[in-house]
Every structure is written in C-alpha cells, then in structure tokens.
Amino acid sequence: MTFLQIEHAVYAMGSTGWWYGIGIFAVYAIWVILAARLLKGDDQLRMFEKFWGGLLVAIWIGKHIHLVNEGLWNTMDNLELHLCGFSRFLSIFLLLFGWRWAYYPLFFWGIVGGVHSLLTPELTSGDTTYMFIEYYVVHGGIIIIPLYYHFVRGMRIGRWTWAKVLGVNLALMLPIGLANYWTGGNYMFLCSPPKVDNPFIIGEWIDGMRVCVDGTFNAFPTYILGFMVAGALHYVVLTALFWKSIKANELES
Image 1 (tube, helix red, strand yellow):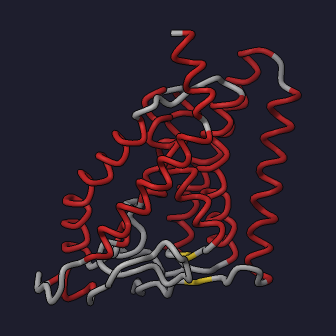
Image 2 (cartoon, one colour; image 1 turned 45 degrees about the vertical axis):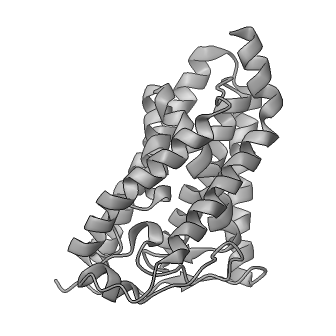
C-alpha cells in the first residue's frame, strides 16, 4: 500500500464546516454536563470516567485504522507529537487511572491549545468524515476534561504551575525538533507555521524544510519566540482566571 502526504484542511471561522465542528463540541460538552449532574457518588463518576477514557482509546485506535485503510497514514503527519496529541494521552491517563500529575500540563495544553484549535481549526490528519469528527472530539475533549476535573473532581493547579508547564514546552522542543528532522514532519509547528489565520502566530517564519532537514538557518527563527511569548501570556491569563480557586486551595492546604 502506498501512503500519501496528507493535505491539511483549514476551516475559516464562521464557515459551514466551522459551525458543524462547534456543534460537535457543544453536544460533547452537554453530554458531560448532564452526566456530571445526574451521576451520584464517586463510584458512578469513576464508572463514567472509565467509559469515557475507553471511548477515547477506541477513537484513537479507530483513527489509525482509518488512515491506514485510506492510504493516508504516514510518520510526517500521524505521530502524536503535537501538544494536542500529548493532551489526548494525558486525558486518557486521567480518565482511566486518575493520575493527578496528568492534570497539570493538560490544564494548560488542553484549554489553550483546544480553544485555538476550535476557533482556527487545521486538520493535520486529513478531512474525511471520520477525521473531521475525531478532530473535534479530541480537541473539544482536551478543553472539557480539565474543566471537568476542576469543577467536578476538585483538582486545582498551583500559582506557578503555568511556569513549570512552560518549561516543559521548552524542554520538548529539542526532541520534537529531532523527530521533525527524522520524519520530515512539522510537529509542534516548529518547522513551518500553521496555515490558519490566527493573530497569535507572530514573528518571521523561515523555510521549514530548509531549517529542519539540512540545518541551514537564513534568519533567526523569531516565530519560536513569538510562540513562547504568546504561550506564556495565555498561561498567565488562564491562571488569573482561576486565581480565586488557587488561593482557596492554598488556604485549605
């Protein structure tokens, strides 16, 4: 079987496809809200969380089976090496096993990355019906799941969690850059910009393939600084929005 490089699909904000995606997210959010309100006690919630996590595993496996069957699977596009891909697995770990450590990076990667992915979607794994639905279930889920654990399960970030997660982002850039070099991919968008029209994509971009494959730098990659500054601002704002609960948790501790 021959596998093709996938053409990324972009939906403009307000387009018909964009609204379909927002509709999927809305239905997903309503399902979780109803479950959280109707289920009683820790046992019922844990059963729901395990079912939820198992469903996400099935969707992930289905994604790769679908891409192989469509002749679209490749290492350039389909490894889970974007922050949203990492967030997918953090969500699964949290739901299936209740691993609290997964909550902290998920809170920032999921909410920030998920919101931007919904507002300015770029489908990097193809635009078939399955991949369209999968995109919105995954990116909607990485917003919903940390909020669920905050409001329903009482998990809390700390005042400096944002800085620690930002440090993890920096630490990931080298191994993900090497993965891009080996696969010819663009994971974490380190080699070329997203195709979407997003005001937070700032700084100059240089030819990604030239930088990531043969190592020739024609200019300082200021877009990386732009990414980090924008990310830090988002993380700080998100922390400020939840500051009251952070302070309350510190007082209780």
